[in-house]
Each structure stands twice: as C-alpha cells, then as structure tokens.
Amino acid sequence: MKNYSPFIPFNKLPELKRKNSNIYNLKTFDTNQKYSNLCSSFIKKIYSSKDVLMTNSCTSALEICSYLLNTKKGDEIIFSNYTYVTTANSFVSKGATPVFADIRSDTLNIDEKKIIRLINKKTKAIVINHYGSISSEIGVIQKICKKRKIVLIEDIAESIFSKFKNKYLGSFGDLSTISFHQTKVITCGVGGALLINNKKYLKKARYILDKGTNRCDFDKKSVNKYRWVSYGSSFGLSEIQAKILFYQLKKFKKIIQTRVSAFNFYLKNLSILKKNKIIQLPKVTKFNRINGAIFYLILKSEFERDRLISYLEKFNIFCKTHYEPLNESPFYKKNFSKQIDTNISNRLSRRILRLPIYYKISKISQKRVCKKIKVFFNENK
Ligand SMILES: *Cc1c(COP(=O)(O)O)cnc(C)c1O
View 1 (cartoon, helix red, strand yellow):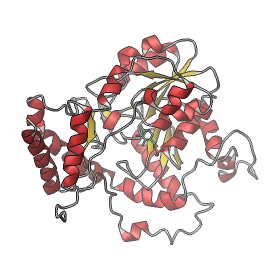
View 2: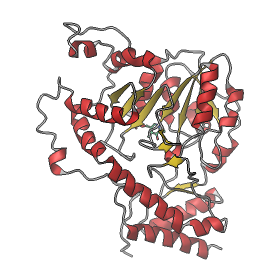
View 3: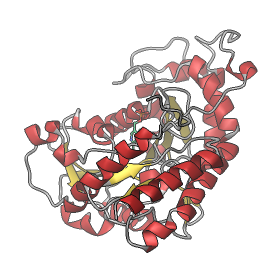
View 4: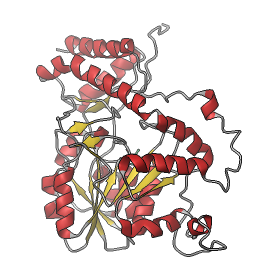
C-alpha cells in the first residue's frame, strides 16, 4: 500500500537566500579571510571572548584545545559519559586517558557531584557539554576547576547562543568549542569555532590553527614571510563555507526563536503524558535560555522506544535515538577497561528518543507528531 502521509523528516537545513549563498563571486578567497573574519567578529562580539577562531569543525576546535593543553600520555581528562565521540577522542588521540563521569537523570548532563572523586594529580582538564542546550551545573563545575587549577573546556556544539543565569554558555570555560555541522542549529554544512577566554592561549592557538605557521603575524604585516613555528594542522574554515555561515549567523535570532517555539509546543502538547508518568520530558529551569537544538522523550524501556520509532515511521515521521554512552563503545572497552559508575547514562541512552525539530517546522507537522504519539500510548495501555 502506498503511504500518503506527509513526510516529516528529523532535520532540515535552514534555507539560504540565493544572493547570500552565491559562492562564485568570492574574489580573493584564498588569501583574504574576509568572511572568516566577519564570522569571527560577529561571534566575538556576542560572547565577549578574547578571540574566536573559525575552524572546519567542532572536532578540529577540540583538537586545537588538545594541542593547547599539551596533552600527553598519563594525563587524565574528565568528560560526561553522554557526549559525542570527538569530545573525548580529540584528547584521547593525543594519549590522554578518558575518565567518564555519569550524568544527572533530569538534564542528561555531567553530574557535578560525581566529579570531585574522579579528580587526582593527573587530572588536566574537565570537558563538559550541555545536552540539547540545557546547561550543566556550570557554576559549580567552574568553582571546582578554579580551586584545583584544572582547565575547563566547554563543548557547546549543541548550545550556541544559549544562556545560564543570563550568561552565555561557552563563556565560562577557558576554551569553548562550537559546531556548525548540518545537524546543528546554525550551520554551513561542516564548520566550527573555538572561543578563547583565557588569554594565555591566544597566540599559540592561531599558530596551531594555521598549520603550525605564523601566518597570522604575516597577515598583520609584523613579519615579512610566514614560517613553521609550532605544532599544528589544517584546522581553518574555508571562505566558501564562511560566506554561507555568515548569512546564517546574521539571522540566528530568528532561527533560534522558531526552534524554541517548536520546543515549547512539544513540551506543552506532550505534558499530559508526563503528568500520567508515561514519559519523561526535558527539564528547563528559569535559569536556562535554550536554543531548541533537541527535543527528546525518555520512555519506559528500550523495547517501547524502538516500537514507537517504527510506529511513527509508518506515518512518515522520523525520530532518532542519540549517543552511545562512551564507556560502552568498542574503542573504550578495548583500550580502557576500567570499571566506572555510569549506570544512569547507560540506562537512559537506551530509552531516549529525539523528535523532529528544525527551522520552520510547521505547527501542523508538530500536531501530527504529538497526536500519533498519543495514539500510540492509547493503543498500548
Ligand atoms: C556534534 C557534536 C560534536 C561534533 O561536531 P563537528 O562539528 O561535527 O565536529 C562535538 N561535540 C558535541 C557535543 C556534538 O553534539
């Protein structure tokens, strides 16, 4: 039988105006970093960072952090057990031992109470993410890091332009990383940025970004040729992508506004299921200003979750699970078999489901998603 239900994808890219996406009229894009500089200034102004480096991914920005910390064998770095692979891999690839902390069941963020006992003399940094743009207990974590002289890095891949207590997420860490991957709120296909809030990293970071050369000094005309001066790699964003990104950044308020309104719509329409203790929904406190990156449900079991996914697919509604907890990954199990307490992340990751959310998702589509979810639970009482 033919399926006539309208198609509701999980994600959709924000549209680009033709005149803004014309990359063929870039003139001297190889040497002139016009659009990268425009993006960098735009972000820098919002975050009041000391510097913003445009990178070709969030992963590259994390790798620059790993270079800046001089990560080596024997170093330990603390991460949430529920984050993307490269949050950890960027440091592990340089020899660090990952130490995973379990998450809180209400926000799916690193449990700040479990961090202290993981710290020892070898602890070099704590790298946190803010799941779906709802903040970690960043104030508490920042204090722990200051007291113990540990570097704090925020991976704000999912939480661009979100706030905690009126302060931007990404402005608490010594360093913070952003993603402009096509699965994120603001995008240029693939891309990223590194926010530098601690001035001791300023110069070194530019060298690492630029393949280990002092090209930034050459561009400022403070040297007459650029040379190999440091470790580094090809981490910069191309001008082609920077141009696309710049026009996305300029309309970030509108993009975020429509996503947050979609988020709130789901929250309101599905609250009856939460009230009846059928599902768990995201918890947004009055201290959070979110960006609508993710809307998720937590179901009673993995079995129920997987059945709901197939049920919705029959109506052309496409939902997704999310991260595999890092301690359950083949790579971690093979190389670091240390037993750690990660009960909550291991349990919840099997029951999470992300609903379709994107710029300009229609209320009609959202109503259909909510209705089908409710019918599913009614039929399965
Ligand atoms: C998406 C994501 C990344 C990876 O971003 P890329 O730009 O694809 O490298 C890293 N960390 C987190 C938390 C993410 O959600």
